[in-house]
Image (tube, rainbow, N blue to C red; front, side, top):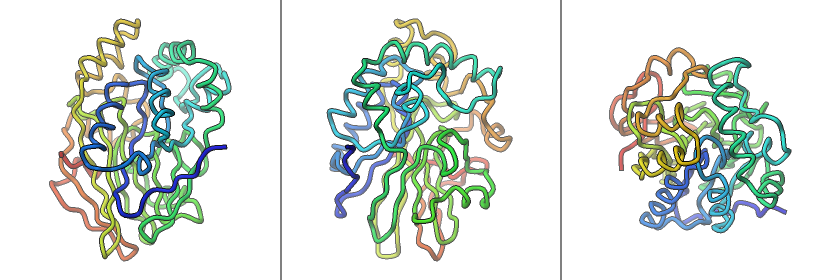
Length: 299
């Protein structure tokens, strides 16, 4: 039985997606949480613990040891079931599809039976009340755990993916951070820890959420970490090329999954961004956005 997520109301939430087997990035965000005095009880991961990088077992062990709330991503679902591929939703024959064969085979062989069993039992969603709002965490969307939803996704499509009982959705999968006001609801993607955001820098992304009298304050935050060490570990384990190079360059090895607006933003560094949201509407604070996407705040 997976414990319910019951964050402390007096402390911020810290949210992150896809560690992707990147142990160095996971350790860095946990250290950041400690500096921000945010307890493990207020941390949540949107899934995909194991993917591109070198340490899927160590990442799973650390998340379990700290009892961090996590929803089942498509990678956990596939690895837990012993599936032949990652179930990421990549177009068959695409570059992403070809690249996934390497890292998925490695992750499947690296994880022990106990971790696969734990992944198989993870919840597909988590619901909780916090800040006077009803929250629900998903991996991707309501309709599928591998649907790619971006900042440029039409509002009607995003709204259709919001569970009926949620005011705030926290989701991942697409690999890029954004917060989208949907009127009476809000969609929040904190970004991922395991890979850069295709912005030409090696930084990765997480978010914090605070309460204020008017509603909620979403802060997208950049995270510097030992990306060189993470890359070395990939190379030592035979995970050379595409994703290993991306840890240093900040550029994805393939743009197959990206809509045109996000493709056009390739290599443009993300800059500071905060969103204050209430059902009356959201207000963005910080530097101008990159392309169509709200952009993270440098800490």
